[in-house]
Length: 166
Image 1 (spheres, rainbow, N blue to C red):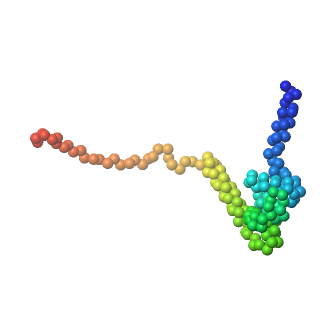
Image 2: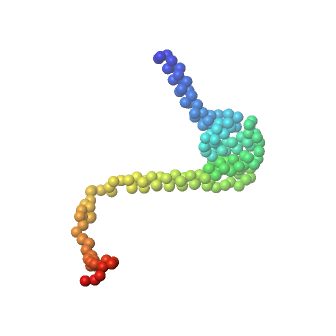
Image 3: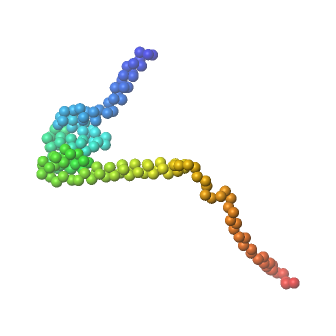
């Protein structure tokens, strides 16, 4: 039993390490190589950043295998990457004589993160059972000393139908 667990454990550990290969390949592969381009494509598919978008644009610009050389395509990748704040994409667009868009997507993401932090801080403060400081007396008495007035309603007696008066 003990001998079988060793290879199974190694296999499971090896397979678990494969989950992060796309990001690791992108960071460790030689730039402009087919491996680098494929790793960038996999990173973008998994929700990558502006630098991976730039890498895909670069692969289309130089025509790496599997990435057709298409000016519209690589310019759109560069523009999207620059909107996410990648300085390499802004430099590439400037080199190609194209306008560099503002990094509005990066700014919007930072604004959302700041709003989330503020909301979390407010929620943490609202869930506090008592305010900081020494305990305070309850300003309202336990039983109210103010009584509501009783409103008297005169009683009327109505004759019933079919009866004659007194």
